Image 1 (cartoon, rainbow, N blue to C red):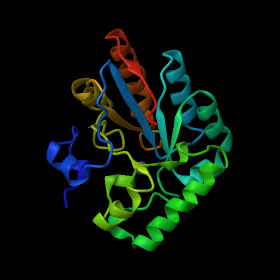
Image 2 (image 1 turned 120 degrees about the vertical axis):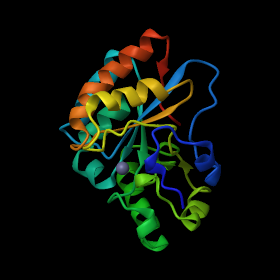
Image 3 (image 1 turned 60 degrees about the horizontal axis):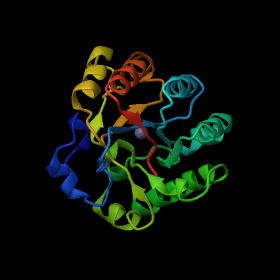
Image 4 (image 1 turned 90 degrees about the horizontal axis):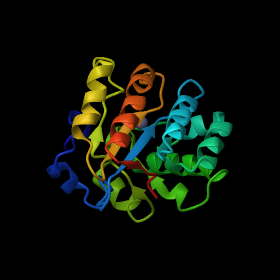
Length: 214
Ligand SMILES: [Zn+2]
């Protein structure tokens, strides 16, 4: 199976493997869909929310269930400020290495954690950690969830990638309708703090809006 993580810009071939996932939005206007995975955490997520607010930008946060449970006030703030929340499993499980039973249970556990704050359809949006899903997992989940993958990966999670390259990855690859991945995680903190304000400024100057998925 192809490894989604080796590409900055997701190739068409990979998109064809899971055609019912959302990779990019067919938009008629200049809009980008920023997404933030692995939060919410107090060290990074409030910074992201403050930056988004400066540009009246909306985004989608794919939360790890245990982080959502530990930081409900941040989750609530994101919702109150008009952002979308998605499911990213309770423990950030790798679908390729996890039995279907355990994987589905972990997603439901995350959903229960998120459902304390958000109602469907918000709680029915799912992104698999690492972009890794077995075909059997995809077959079951696609009828229950909107599965969101991505069009542009910033590589902010990769300690070997400098912050300037993370910024360049987004500036050079994002286009109308792109779903862009950042992380509100400790590992990505320095890069998100650097790149996010510049991405918001750059695309706002070009007339782009930033919207939440679902
Ligand atoms: Zn993740």
